[in-house]
Image (cartoon, rainbow, N blue to C red; front, side, top):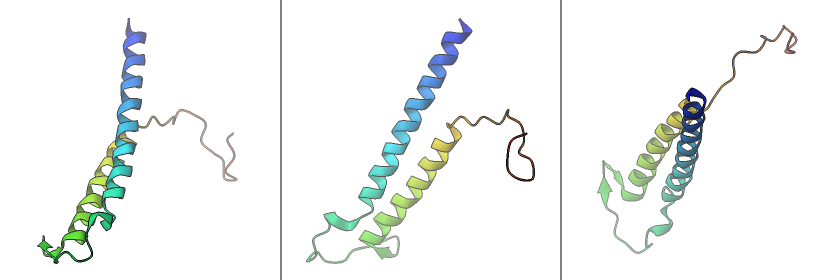
Amino acid sequence: MAEGSDERRVRRRRTLRTVLLGLIGLLFAASIPWYRDPEAPLRIWLGLPDWAAVALVSYALAALANAAAWRLTPIDDGGQPPDRRGAAR
């Protein structure tokens, strides 16, 4: 029974990591001011032009999502340490 729950946990982590990576892509797409009308008046948000504030917030959220995705990434550190030439022993 423990093996099945381990597989479900791995699958759930992989799915969540995939969702987070998709979110990062969407946030980077949202950071591009393509939605802004060139004739629209400039608005100030957070002391910045609106397009710059949207980009900055998008980058910050993408960084948090990236950190969360890395936390969910399995890293195999059980192998042999490399020797000074960089090859495994």
